[in-house]
Image (cartoon, rainbow, N blue to C red):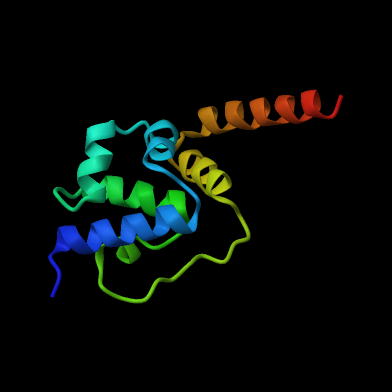
Amino acid sequence: MSSEKEIFAQKLNYYMNRNGKTQTDLINDLNINKSTISTWCNGTKMPRMGTIQTLADYFGIMKSDLIEEKPATIKDDGLDVDARLLLAIYDRLEYGQRRELLKYAKFQESEQNQ
């Protein structure tokens, strides 16, 4: 039986490969330290539960998919990793910040459509 750290490392590497993400992508997208990601990927350490939830949101999976030895359950929402990450961030914002994010997104859309 594998240790929790080994299971997490296997699962993290699996979801990174499945989504075409590298350690550098996680560093940039989630603002996580390079050596921290490396220790997770090689099974030396495990992140805290809040960070595991952030990773699950990023990959569009359940938190348990990263920490339990079981078949994966993928959220079939049709969204790519970036869209799921944006939604996860949106969920953590307060109402005023959500309105500002929406305003910015609409501005970006209008710029793109010009």
